[in-house]
Every structure is written in C-alpha cells, then in structure tokens.
Length: 398
Image (cartoon, rainbow, N blue to C red; front, side, top):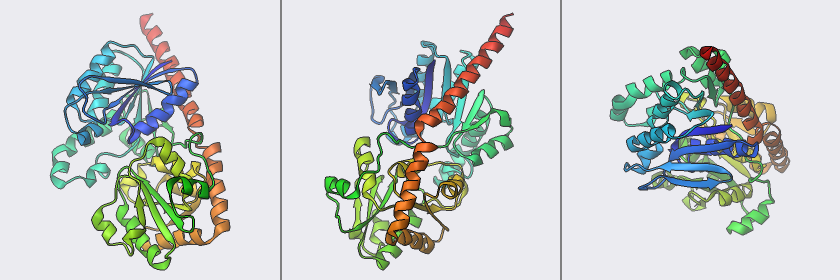
C-alpha cells in the first residue's frame, strides 16, 4: 500500500510521535508511507528526509512556530493540497482536524476519491484544549473549532479514536459505531529498555544515593497538581530528586517548592537520549486530573513509562483507570495533591512494590501496547477500507 499521513503538529512533537510510530512499522510490514507534517523551523522550500524508511515532508509557512504546531499555516495548507494533486496514494489518514489536515483531507475524499481514514487523538474544541486559551481567543475561534472538529469526524470511512471516551462522543455526534476503531497510544519497546538505574545515572551524572521521580511533558496541562504534590514529598523526604524532560517548568511554580534546588530539568532531548534517560528514575509521576480535556487523551508518555519498566503514579481519569487496574503498573491517586504525594512516597519506600509493578509495566508494554501490535490493527483497517472502496468503485463503473 502507498499510504499518506496528514499530521498538524511540527515534526517531533505531539501527534507526530503517534504518526511516526505507526508509519515506521507500516514500512517494516512492506508498505510505503509519507508523512506530511509542519516544520519546526521556518524554511523556504519543502524539506524532505527519509527516517527509518518513512518519507517525512515538512511544508514551509511564514507564520510562527506556535501557529505551525497548531496546524494553522495557510501556505502549508495550500502546498499540501498541491502535493496531493501531483501524487497518488492508495489510502490517506488525517490526524485531527486543523486546517493543514482538514482541507487536504476534503480534497482527498471528494475530489481525488481516495479512501480516507480519520484519527481523533485529542479533544480540541469545547471542554478540550480550547478551554486553556484566553477568553478572547475562545470567542474568536471557538465556533470554527467546534464546527470543524464535530463535522470532520463524520466524513471518513473509518474513525480511529485514541480513547474510549472519544469513541462515545463520536457516537453521540452521529458516527456509526461500526465505523469507529479504538487504538490507544503505544510503547516503543525497541528503543526504551529497562536498564539498570545506576548505569543510566552514571551516564547522565545523576546521584546514585537519591530517590528520583521522573516527569515529562510537551505541554503542562496539570503541572499545578504535580508541583503541589512535589512540595509535600520534598517536605517529607529529603533524599528525593525530581528530574523533568520536555517543556521547562514555570519559574514561579518552581520557586514555591519546598526545595527548588532538588529539581533537574533536561528540557527537550534528542529522542535517543530521552529513551536512554527514562530508566534512571525510581517512579514516574503522571498528573492527569479528572476533567473533560484529559478524558479525551491518551498521552504518549504513559507508553514510554511502561517501556522503561518503572512504576507510575497517576490519577483516576479516563482510560488510565482501566490500564492501571488491568495491568497493575502503578498506583492511582485522587486529584488531591496530598493523596498524589502519599501514593508516590508509598512506591519510593516499598522496593518490592516498586520492582513488581515496574515489571508489570514492561510486560504490559510488550504484550498489549507494542507499537507493532497496534499498527497491525491499523493495517487491517486500511486493507478493509481499500477493499470496500474498490468494490464500490467497481459497482459504480458497471
């Protein structure tokens, strides 16, 4: 199959990670995959590169990185449509509904007559990420965001949802249940390995005599809950260190910690270094407050944590509840920072519990959440849709 993925985030961030993991495994299965995604930096011409057999193409757009990452580039959108008009694919998959994805998807569906699959990976409109924006921006783009998010879920032959909650919402919007397929986020079990903590800590210059909590985020949705819990932990235990990767923490929030000096931030690391660092921790903290925005998400980080073979403490929200209860990969806390802190301390002070749930996490990653396994499910969906589409085309021809 010749497959095209339409992604709205810049290369290396957000949904691109999900896109690329599907793509590289589809290539291993013998298919050809192109990802159209937004450029992390300003470029003047399309940027093409081959990564693990996947052709990744970034289109130029003069707008800022924040808008490019949001999939709002008008030049990017036009260039993607031009690319589609001069290419041929057996099937196209669109990830979410931002303009750089939506309009090429509409071109795919209604003009080029190529089978279209759609993915719903985040709730963006009412109750979703839009609620985090300034009020004036919500009023300005809210009607468009809500309209396109809801309508775009109905046009594809199949709708892939990343959470069961989004599946239920899609049914409520009028998408037939028979067209909805649930595929959660996966785990990169090939590159993220449960190596000995001491070995990893020596590599990164981390102390061997401390308990280390890990946290990573591209966007800090529930960082206030995390920092309040860290304050409690630091006050109770002086041998605990917090290390973070991804977006840097707000300096004002850090200043309110019991001991801001016991925080080490690595920022955004190259993927290989990020994968190597994860097993250095004793426990991961994954703040995931029980609110609508989170019910519609499956953050990539939980698969990374499981692959590293370390326990995680999170909150009782959405699909995370079933994941933890079914596979016993850590402890679930309420949205109360004190409870979040206590659950984390329980794992830090119980070595047997930590080792047991860490092994469970790795087993779950290998048996149920390996990207290769999830990609087989997506591949089956593609094959089914292409066969169905071919049958319809033949019937129309007759």
